[in-house]
Every structure is written in C-alpha cells, then in structure tokens.
Length: 139
Image (cartoon, rainbow, N blue to C red; front, side, top):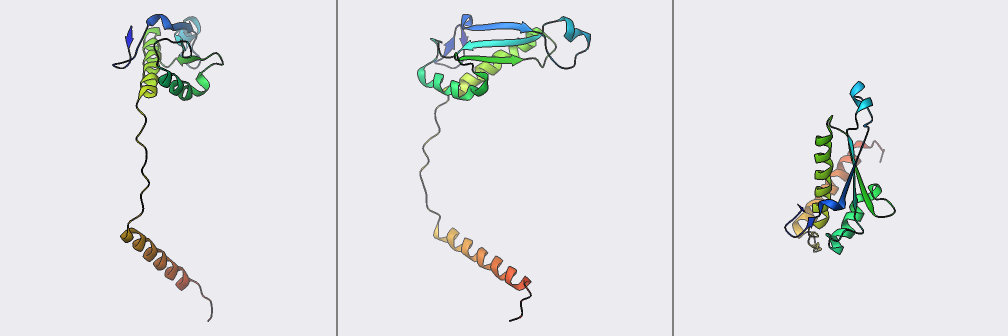
C-alpha cells in the first residue's frame, strides 16, 4: 500500500507501469534503452479513492485522462528508468493530494470602505485634471 494522505492509501496493484523509449536528445543510449515510464492509474474504478477525490482528480487530469477514466502519466526527463519511475509516481501522488485537499472557504462579499471609495474618486479627479491640462483646446 502506498500512503497518499492520512485517510487515502492506494494499492500498488492499481498502478500499471510500462517502459518505452524516450524521445529527444540522449545520443546512442536513447536508441537502445527504454527509460521513459508510462504510468497508468484507473481513476474511475479505483476502490481506494473517495467519490469527491475521484471527481476532483478527473477534473485535474484534463487531457491525461482517457475516455475509460485511466490517468496516463509519462516521465522521461531522467536517463534512468528508476528515476523516471519515481518521478511518475510522485506526480501521481501529488495529483491525488491536490484532489483530496479540502475546498477553499466560501468568499464573503465585502463592500469597499468609505475611505477607499473617496481615495479612488480623488485619484480619478486628479488624473482627469492632468489629462485636461495636456489638451491644447482654445477656450
């Protein structure tokens, strides 16, 4: 079990990893080793995630979520398979933590203070006077 938060732990069998060849620079090594990691996690069918977290994770995943509800993360920045595995897993855990975070408190609408309203109007008047002085209209 991988502990994500205090209340959420996911089973390692829910995570599927496959290794592919990385794209980009890397010389001859990139052509002969499969160092890039494709991590797949079935968000919709995961028994470990509460419903609220599942919905938030689907929203956060965006284009990385397939039509079947599988989250696909690709890590290929490191030159070793192990570092890429760690990076992909850490990104998955970070996404789940973000989805599990409590919603922000509701915003209470406030009115501007009398003083701030007055200062705003005074600054607008000053600006208006400055602009009028710039114009060279004969009056």
